Amino acid sequence: MGDITAPPTAATCPADHGSSRYRGRPVGHLCDSCYAAYIDETDNRQAEEEGATAPPPPAAPACPGCGRDQDRRPTGYGRWVLLEPRLPLPNAVVPEEHQWFITDDGIAVNRQGETAPFGDHCRIAHRLVCSRRSHPARLAPIFTSIWLHNRACAGLPIDGADDPGDTLP
Image 1 (spheres, rainbow, N blue to C red):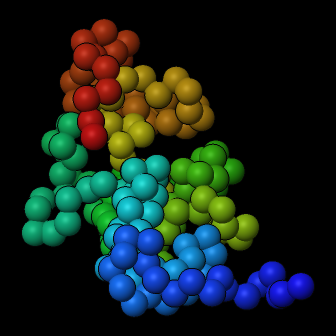
Image 2: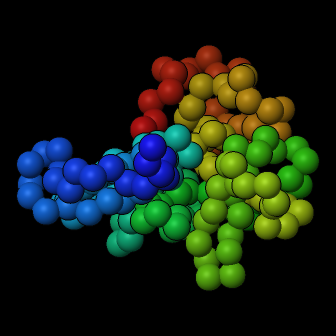
């Protein structure tokens, strides 16, 4: 019986692009082009899940929904996230999957899956509390509080009666 940790012996890309190399599990053998496409697709999926879909510079760091300037930060996987400006929150009030931390070099890192936080306070993605979004009822109470504050600052009714629903990307 062979070693189950050894890579499969096939050394061609499934897309028949020719020479490939083993990229580890679960990827297997891929050529450089298919591997780059795989990484890009993975990064895009992560960006969608985390809300890191902000346009990169030189575009303005403004929310496409409410127009307010945000704190735009790069992620470690080449995407950009709009964080609620000037609002560090205690980690205890923000669900782990919504906790963002800023590294010493300015990179935004989502805690999702990490066991140890980077500090006692975190940031949150603006998309969760944008005044033009529907009420964030399925999220932690802290999100409702910030959403209500953003609606009041925008001069919008706090009951959300004028909301057409989530219109943000």
